[in-house]
Image 1 (cartoon, one colour):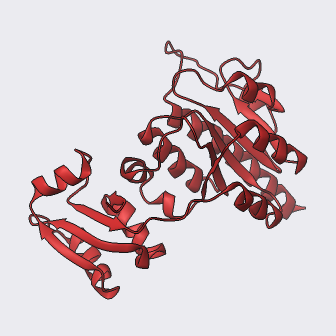
Image 2 (tube, one colour):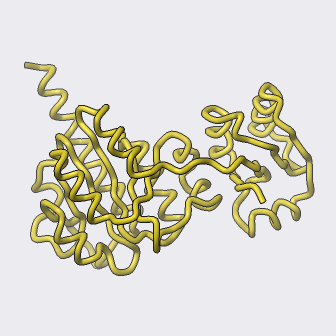
Length: 252
């Protein structure tokens, strides 16, 4: 069966970036609102097959996912590989990567990719094994961001971190075990932010290969944050610092 993508934002992004990647689209018979009519016009412009179906058919195809009355069947896409990462680094003056170590929930994977794209990350790096798949749930959570940002799956995450360090990319790991906060470190320049999985966080070897470790200060009674929320906070502290640095440069 062809891979599926569901949700208005995800399919709009797919039409914008890879219209030829879409084989056909199923749309609920009850969806006749402006958003869907606009989307249908885009599909018709690209001569993409549209099939009207009952909602229960969409429910079955999406496995109970929040499809918003629309599902696209896509051609199998080629995945980014380790060599693609090396090529990407060569073409970037100031690379900014997000490394996910052991994220197993597709919702979290998609949400992290969405935040990564919004914050200007050039690529998201994960391990091939014991990691959430980039399935329809992840793509729906990413709200279309998966079409704009490379997800590079690697065989050995620690080895890739070593490669990044050889390319003068500073590795900052986010963990509650850190002795300083993300507000006490420099997050400009050539940077990779590492975030661990939902339950155990980063693996020991990953922690040991980071240049430095930072934490998010917890002021209230709760002891931790949702993984994708914590990732967004860390990414946007880096964004704040990078914007401030660029502003200061332009003022000189």
